[in-house]
Image (cartoon, rainbow, N blue to C red; front, side):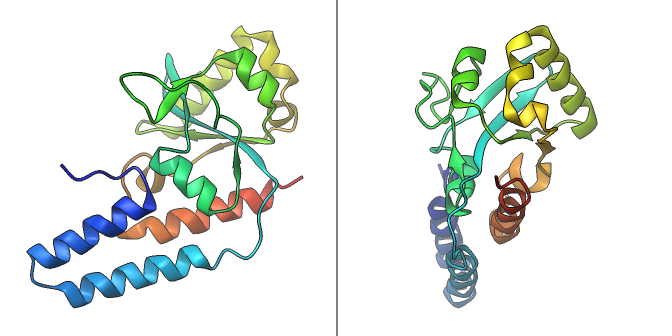
Length: 177
């Protein structure tokens, strides 16, 4: 089974497909493009970010061991859920406990979904209204809630990983303190 929980995993998968399809040169060229795009990082952002994965009624915090978490890290962001306790059955995610989120107080909340982006955003905002503590978050007070494109974050973007990193860098830049 081929994993895709990090940019490194995606590069290994491309290399494997290159070998299997007898096209190692093209695979290495793609890997080089990915490395170059990721290495373009010149500054670390101080943007404290909460990545939330889910659908209405089921939201999880995304950890650094997930692909989206790795993208955030490589883009220079700070994942406020880094020390949240992981789920046993899905170790790349953690329960979205309001107390922990309040303690972390992110600058921006990024939503990752497979479904209708507006529907998920609305459901998440409704979820926040149920718990008064959410209203005190810097991200909520400032309206810093972003729905990430599902083709770059909701699924494995494959060779579009460079676009995902660039998109995340832009978000971090936009919401930097």
